[in-house]
Amino acid sequence: MRVGMAGLAGVATAALLAAAGMSSLGATQAAATACTAGTSTDFNGDSVVDTVIADPDATVGGAKGAGLVRVVLGGGKGVFEISQATSGMNATPEAGDHFGFSRTSYDADGDGCSDLVVGAPHEDVTKDGADLIDAGAMYVIHGTPTGIGTGSTIENYSQSGLDSSTTTEAYDWFGYAVKAGETSTGAPYLAVGVPGENVTSGGKTYADAGCVHYIQGSTKTTVNQDDTGVPGVVEAYDRFGYSLAGTNRYFAVGVPGEAIDNAKFAGGVTVFNHTIAGGVPTALVGIDQDATGITGTAEAGDGFGTSVSMTSYRPSDQTYNSDVLLAVGTPGEDIGTVADAGGAAVVRIQPSGAYTEVTAIDAGIADVEGDPVAGDFLGQRVTIANTDTSVVTSTNTVRLAVGIPGKDTGSVKDAGAVQIFRPLAAIGAADKLLTRGSGLPGTATARDYNGIALTSGASNLYVGVPYSKASTTPKGVLYAISWTDIDGTTSTGTTTYQPGSGGLPDVGVAFGTVG
Image (cartoon, rainbow, N blue to C red; front, top):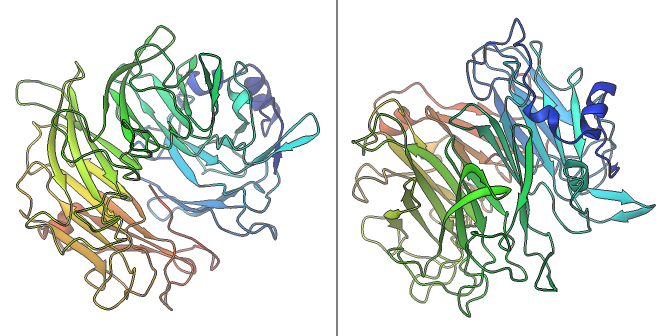
């Protein structure tokens, strides 16, 4: 696909909105009759949770790696396919676009139906007749009472199409990460990571320093490490915006390329709240492995912040979720002399920016399953969930899932695993290890890399195995399992999504990409 610099829209109305910027994303409309806004991922507005499953490596119209997304409506109301070939997209699938590489959802227009945001960070963008390779693109597909995709209002954005004060350039990777939601005041927000952005500071340009586009209601801005109050120093290859996470009060930006002292690619994370001050979101704190109270030492190649996840936290002295728990993955962490065994940490952030490490996890710690093994990459993906935000947060309400995609299962190399923790409890208390054939359906096969795709909500954990090599799931698979089933208090069973069943077309390359 080639997307123009003005930010093309799929229909005439959306084209007008895109020409004016991102006003459509913060506009408030009368709620559609059939949309009740009952859940945060509810594209047809019927108060039933819908499931988004990407296949960014899918072949579309003969273009390998063009990518697509499938939306499975809850309650058996149908499966919808969205790609750059979707009617109204005004785009063309091309090899290596990777549409669906990143995904998020929120009610951008206030009509009660969730809207889907999809990133295609390897999209080539045409400018002045030249192709800007891997500049990246982002799409907003609006939900409707009858579903999503064909018939939806669709907005297409390049980087400068989203914000005319910025410049679209080759290898920016605009849309590499996306995160959306609603602030505590009810305003919709959207953050878009551009980790390949070159940033000029002090008259010098730093390649791949990275930035984040941030939209809240009708306000749109960008933020990077050269902005006043933002922790860190602009450096080449920081990749600020590589990963994103957020809640209604905070959002976090992963900076896995951050150099700490002389340790290149040691990594860091910056936490913001949603208050706009001085034209940018308010930065609260920067965290890395050399920060006071954080376990470990910042070392070259650690990649602290490669993955991040957030969930709300209510202290015992508050009547609301004033704080947040931040989970951080460090897949390149060496444990002793064991290279890339990986690690993860959970940090509590308070409104002031004060932070406390709640737990640190790696396979060298007693009671963590197994021993450190080179190339396990524990922490390549993390997801944290508060199962009940209506009560004071406790050891019983918070779950952490950590992906270990390089872990061997018995003699099966790189089959992968997912380890479940209660991060507010002692390590080893009710921990679980999920592998295919033990805790998850299927059979573990070599190079499945189970644990490379994770996401979660208050009720369910979603484990994708997009690179499954098993004969029964060669096109990829996604498992949805309730936290209570993992706890052993219920036995409702795992829901399996795979091509060829449940109304899903029997095609796919990396089906099951989530997180």
